[in-house]
Image 1 (cartoon, helix red, strand yellow):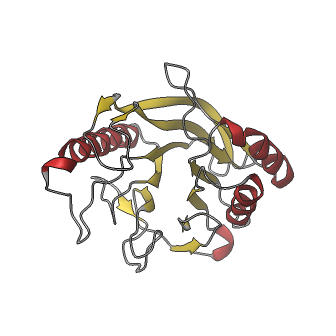
Image 2 (cartoon, one colour):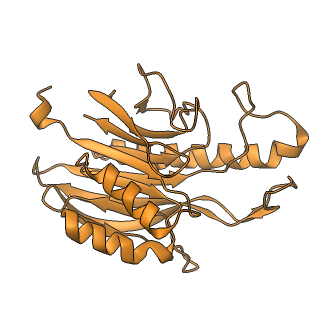
Length: 242
């Protein structure tokens, strides 16, 4: 593929504990790669003014859907000269529920939603892009890989498996409708697979959180290339080229 025609999708987990300047610096560093789409995790309403400023400066638009209860869901950014938003909503991945007691973790987690956006592809008229952004349940993977099997983590593991199934089911529905599908986010699981799609990590080593490749883009096909970007967060951002 000609480098000039490559199109990128990116995801970045910019921790909620970052100060405003650190959050903004990380966001600008990822957008310097010129992705068509950027999925962002852990950015609450207190980041909205930064998202406004950065989007205006760099030629992006951004939006976040609200859950049925009015709670903010993860935002998404896009290049309006390449994509035109048609629909913005949410997909319920898991209901609010008790997930067991772990020191330093919440016993009960709120409902989990994916951000769902449908775009007209302005570069390829007639095509539509379905984008699904997610942040799945943490503390589910064993240190050696695979799901944790001990009873203390069982409810979290079951929740993560439900989130993963529902995310994949929604993505496959978009695929059947002929949409170009991009999934992006923090799965809290090393090299997570989603049936019917190819992770950007296939054929690539390394990770985004230490050795773990938990941040990923999934698409119908493998990547032309991918890179990780160090940010002020503990997660590296991931940019996948197609």
